Length: 401
Ligand SMILES: NC(=O)C1=CN([C@@H]2O[C@H](COP(=O)(O)OP(=O)(O)OC[C@H]3O[C@@H](n4cnc5c(N)ncnc54)[C@H](OP(=O)(O)O)[C@@H]3O)[C@@H](O)[C@H]2O)C=CC1
Ligand SMILES: CC(=O)[C@@H](O)[C@H](O)COP(=O)(O)O
Ligand SMILES: [Mn+2]
Image 1 (cartoon, rainbow, N blue to C red):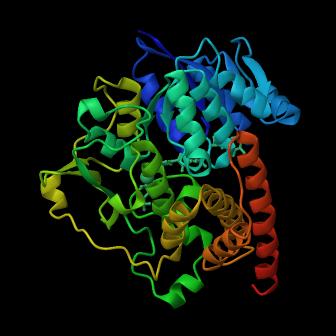
Image 2 (image 1 turned 180 degrees about the horizontal axis):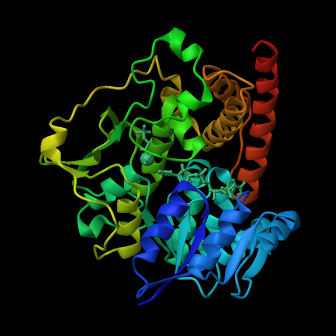
């Protein structure tokens, strides 16, 4: 079967790796649609290379920049705009497979559109599950969509599941699974002192020891909120309670995660820190296909280390466990406040150490009311409210920066 693929967030780190893998399989994979937010020259280049039929850009001004960048005799692709455009390609009848790789909660609506349209969803974006995992999984169950986790840890766990447990939206964990062991590199500040953390720059925070990724997820790895988001992601993907998900610091990022079974066996997936492996797994599933990733020399590597996480040095990790144990509203607030705080940090408006303060303050304010989050509109409204609260707190912190 030929897969007709929509790559949401094609100009990002995951998007580029996805196009790299697709280009290795011209006989079985075609690009139908691409999307980008700011990089119109790159998008035009990608659309020419992949012969995409449709591109999605945020607005008319971006569409004009895309047209200006088009320097090929090939016909211009159809250009669609904004969230409606994203939803339309994610649910298009021409599309079999959707790579959800837009960063942040901006991916929620198109990911949900793909879920409602019974697509094969390669889910790289984790913020959608944090904000609305229940709604997303319900849509998957109702439509019969297929979800393949792409986040390296969740892809590793999925690979370690027995075939009958590799289902898209389980309602309970497989009976033979005792725990999920979620590995964490510890990021660039694994051993930093409080004084060093107080002074870190965006460049230092984005300098991940093992992975090359977008700036937002790189900062999340540095605060270890990435691991907190991944605990919530694992909870929704595998129907696993928080107390059965153990975070294990593993600085080499070679063991991508593990599944522990009731007989005491622990199955692990190992590989180089290169996202083309989980992407190829998702694109090829249930077959194994070429990804372009070369050999990994375990003898040269020599050792694999494992530690307990330091919750005092990384308060964001505890905030995420607390949010998962508290309410869905707390998870929405956690994610929204983090997006605001990371953006402010990357713009050097607040300090790295302010990020957990903005998150804690926002969750605290949200938790004073009860929220019903039965519909997407409820989640989006709370997300906006939490962003406003986080922005207010960011302004306060900026004045003491
Ligand atoms: N990078 C990695 O190795 C991993 C990433 N992930 C997850 O995958 C997702 C993507 O990460 P990554 O590729 O690193 O991110 P990048 O920042 O590299 O790329 C983000 C993509 O989303 C687009 N985008 C940004 N904001 C918006 C918006 N408001 N609306 C629509 N599109 C937007 C960008 O467009 P443009 O560039 O044109 O502005 C770009 O194409 C994240 O959720 C991340 O947590 C998960 C595991 C590993
Ligand atoms: C590649 C990937 O999946 C990232 O989420 C990665 O895991 C980040 O590494 P740490 O968050 O473990 O530092
Ligand atoms: Mn990950």
